[in-house]
Image (tube, rainbow, N blue to C red; front, side):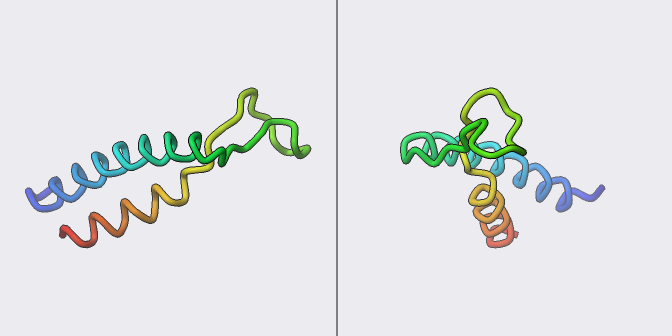
Length: 67
């Protein structure tokens, strides 16, 4: 891997972790939660924040802008 590729991979991972943590906190605060048992296919045991999509979009935009 070249230095530039390593930098992009590292920035992507760091951005995803940071944005994911913030998005999950914001989702909890806004009560954007996936409640277990609300539909048949939902098998998790505890309410889960709905933050994955926004995390993906923000991370992709941020890393694309930096690189």
